[in-house]
Picture 1 (cartoon, helix red, strand yellow):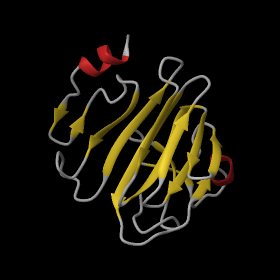
Picture 2 (cartoon, rainbow, N blue to C red):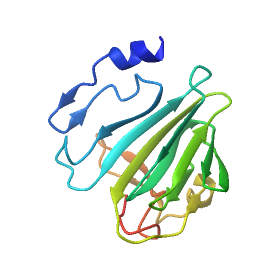
Picture 3 (cartoon, rainbow, N blue to C red):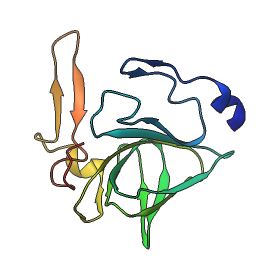
Amino acid sequence: MTQSDALAEPITHEGTIFRKTNVHRGRQMFITPQNSTMQYLCYARTILDPSTPEAGWENGKHETALILLSGEAEVAVGADRFTLSERDSVYIPRGAAIAVKTRSSADLAEFSAEVEGHYPLQMVRYSDIKDDKSLHFTAGGPATTRDLNILIGKTCGQVVF
């Protein structure tokens, strides 16, 4: 499937449910306060592969969290460079130029919100939080059990993602 084929396939929006956020290549913003009930939060997804190995953007007034869902990615924020592995994340302050690339494939979730302050860039490795019981725990009952990882939290920026 080419990028134009993927973008031609409609993104289904049913109230607060957005489906098929994985059918594109590159970066695409899906959820904003203008098209959802979210008051502040925006959600985008960047999917890279050999046909679309990189994406870049500026986050303007938004602080941004990137969480690598799968694959491996190199993230550049200004002069800073990080290599993300699965479940790693990075907090990016407002006013940043962001570039993401991969040599194989990468699927990144992006969460952002406008913020007044400027907070420091912070890399969060999954390996650093997975054994911390306050950041990695199981929640829910027998039919709704979830394994939760707090990768970006109140220690990063103003908004808790």
